[in-house]
Length: 316
Image (tube, rainbow, N blue to C red; front, side):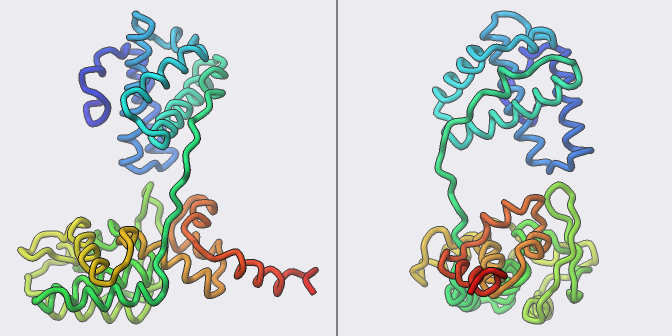
């Protein structure tokens, strides 16, 4: 468990609790399909909680002791964590991880986890995604096309942004494409978060943009090489695309929220705004929850009411 959490605290966890945590993580990975980044975050959050309880109780916390955690103990943990400059959003994430672990552990060990599960997360203002307007998304792509003095780099950046906006890919998914994926087919098979697979239709504009880049790219390629290459030929990084967009938004006067991920938000919003079905958009984005897709969209209330009034059987 050295990849997350405070390494100096790992040794404070009892062997039984450490084994239970590892078993739970494997359960999350294998049966729940949790992404590796999620697993690492879970591991650190729960390990820190278990370490705190050892210090707080001044004794090793075996499974029997963990079953006796009280509301007072939970408050002490939250107070210490918040005192370490952990914000409300991060505190809520940590509590969610601990609750998920305890829910599983209680079912496995046969104890009542009410003290843990009834603990309330701090309130925080959720930051809603801020997609770009259609004109702004087009302007962004036009701007990155003229930023580099290397034509192949300009074509590369246009191709990446077109995939984000035109196909709703995550930046990691776009940069994860391999040379053998080009020329792009009419539908891309994408392996997204939690190893979830989805089919994404590829617009002609996206295929054309990728073809133009491939024709100009000077680096020799093999089927398993990254499709999108950095200046020296290595794999293109998400940071590089973020910088390209940062330079472009400065020129265009766009806000700091105009990021690669905002292009994906824009894909969802513009589809819904054009009359797309929310559940179909959910499938295209690879979201497990419809509520996540709803958070990605930014359609104004007036337009939603217009659709409602036009489509509802009782309207008119």
